[in-house]
Image: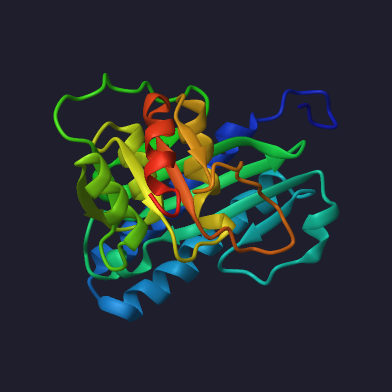
Length: 253
């Protein structure tokens, strides 16, 4: 991509990373001030992170559409060629409680697929991007570890864990759980019972860039920038585990 002057433009992945860093910095600063805690801190964090990301995208990619959890859904995105799918603060509860397991998601959907993304993990000081993709650690030995919601673990994950003699590992935000698979802290992440496109777009893009499998629980592909913002279930795992997990997650197993 080039600017009108002919100079090379900043690559999309660098824009995603800069936007995620800007939100992360705003969120860490707000929390460090110590004026707010709990739900008020989470609400303030949502607003601060949205402002940081929207400001950077407006300056760097003014012609692109933005689809964010913290903004009104503009139907123009459905006919746009380039759409940024954003969750400015994934894990508002965890952020407000002072926990580390929350994230910032910035993904670009273009050409009908996720093409660039960044996920900031400010609580642990990491930023993961699609290019260069993260290097997957070698598979660990021992029992299979499956990340699940710490507040609403899905029953289907328990069923699969029993079938596979797996350990369920509760964690906070969706982005943190997906990147836990990328970072080798767990072998898979299973979610059911409700989710939106912005909850998974950026972490799924990073996971797929790293070579992980990311699918719906019925094995169908994940689709983004659809009219319905809901994308209610998700499996992210090492590719060699996908068939076993899908079998264990199938109704009636």
